[in-house]
Amino acid sequence: MSKYVDRATPKLFELCCRGSHIKNVTIRIHRAGTEKFKYMDIVLEEVLIALVSGQGAEQSGFPVEVVTLNYGRIKFEYSQQRRADGGSAGIVSGGWDRTANKPFA
Image (cartoon, rainbow, N blue to C red):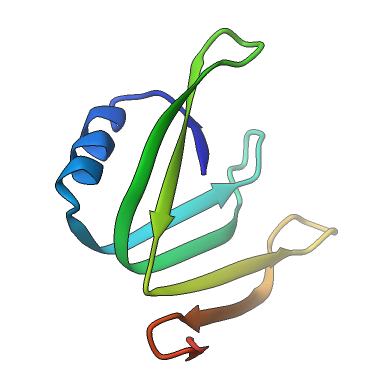
């Protein structure tokens, strides 16, 4: 994943160097704007940070880094949004267990 360098950067680098396993990682994606509607959760289990790499600065001038995560299991939860009022219209989910090579819910 690509992200701006921030206060998490030193700890991500340290965990990568140590080869530490992380039990769970949740990445939340929200809609831009005043109402921060969460439309996607990506849940990873048995995570190892494989790489933290600087990528220079974007047009904004802020430095960017790429973090590569390896995982045993992954699940996506997409929250559908109603066009009429912007509220939730249900969740669609799917996932995969790489260690067992089968679907993961």
